[in-house]
Length: 142
Image 1 (cartoon, rainbow, N blue to C red):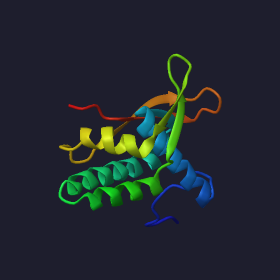
Image 2 (spheres, helix red, strand yellow):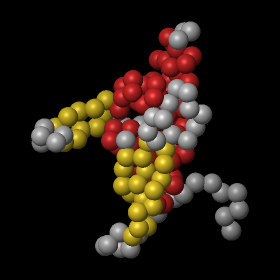
Image 3 (cartoon, rainbow, N blue to C red):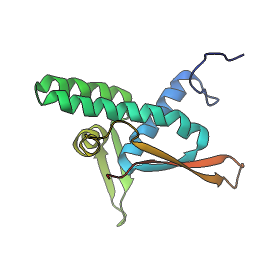
């Protein structure tokens, strides 16, 4: 029985699961939406919302004392992968500092919002193995 046991194992050991979570949060912040399996999206959603809340609180308290912002950036850097490279529309590789984007673009966007920064949309089955797929995206500014 799994009474009162939280979290999803996703068929991986602990270090693999933590690395998966860090990389997927970094991809979500970088691209602002990702296509993944429904189980991974359900695991990722609360973790991503906590990271965004951490950044929001760091910026809010950092207005009074900059040490709070530095501390929040360091905490966020331990919980997400640091740098992402992706190919832009022209085919050039672009390097994105995930923590910088989180604190400079994502957190200020949700400064007035109390949670609910992500949305999960189910998109059906994957053709190869019939896995349930979902798009996890950051909610647009209202």
